[in-house]
Amino acid sequence: MISITYRLLICLLLLLTLRPAAAGDVKLVIDTRLATLTVLEEGAVIQQFDNIAIGRFGTTRYKKMGDNRTPLGIFRIGWITQETRYHRFMGIDYPDMQTASRALFDDTIDFSLWERVRRDVDAGKTPSQKTPLGGYLGIHGIGEGDIEVHREFNWTNGCVALTNEQIDRLAEWVTVGTEVEIR
Image: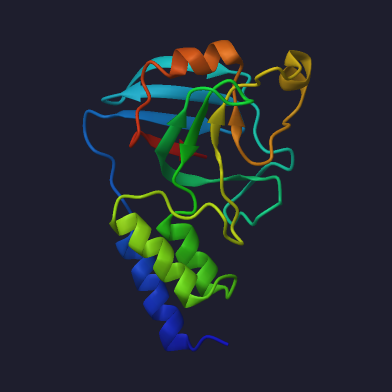
């Protein structure tokens, strides 16, 4: 059981890990209710993709491994893979410090895992993708998947999916470090 003092310390750590967006950078805003992904540059819309798919069980502020939900929050692109079964994959730096701090606060993870996530974040690395909070989340295409399923259902295990054509177009603006807001 975590003491009140310890929980307050964790809350303070959570507040200290909030990251402001850098001015002039490209930013992706994923609106899960409208099923859109918008590319912004210096606050101006430069492209919007409609009919995206998210996790089959919707969204959550507190993702756990295997829940098939898309995490809400502000992340960054941690890596990009050009050839995958999903055509193209842009991984996000999940779990981030906010998620790890909430999980520590709720006793979902222990301090050593929280510390490992913190060290990775401080070093500019993507945290371990094998945690009780899940991992290997990102934005991807549908690969050889069924376009009709994509159009009709939220079908991913927690990722954000676009058509292959949309993900190729999105790749024109995205680099490692691009901010991704999922709301």
